[in-house]
Image (cartoon, rainbow, N blue to C red; front, side, top):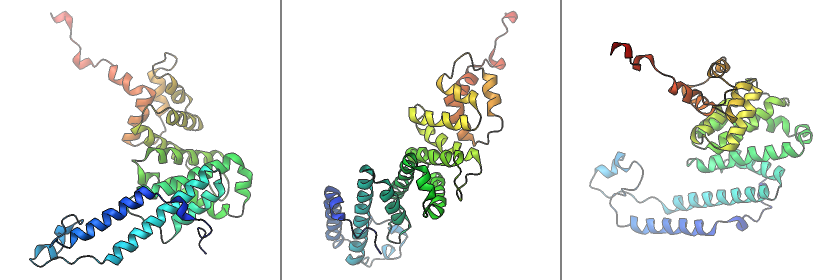
Length: 284
């Protein structure tokens, strides 16, 4: 059964993008007829055809057409899911996004559409939790969907260049850490820290990212570091206090750099006088 069958997906077509895509495909087909080797094809130089004097075979038009149609259908489904999300039909957007993510017709490869669907799943879940957490967890589908949502949140590592997805993933992980809902469990509390530090690595001054990091640090019982976020150079938090607060945190080199930067520890370390560079004026 196709859960998208009841939707008029044509209503969600991006006309400008579709027409442009079709025009590019048609232009490529016409141009390919005059080519003996299609240099714009990926890895064309690795094929035996391009190393010989014989003309390269032209790909079957049916393959191009079917792939284009599948991608076009996939985009329309994403538009439909976004429509339901914007209309605050969060349960519908969650279910449809999960179906699309798990379906065999899901076109993978570019990455941008991958993370777009996954982000819709997490944001729909957060909205449903905000509205009725008991109803969400008490539903029969939670036993299957709950673990799936946690695994999707953990996929932020596959999309480190998308800070918004890391931010959303951190919100989901800390929510399920502070509100364990069997069979869902986030056993390692520090798992909530890495995604938000990844988001901040690209946007150190983003206020909502800093607010999320403050919540995570409070959850991890690091009030000194949480306080340092709002006033990194304040006299009430010393550099020694910050250093002690780092003890016990398991961080990569990049994560440590980011956390030191936003808490002001890195600036203080850089401002410390180095004895090797001090001049002994008594020798003059």
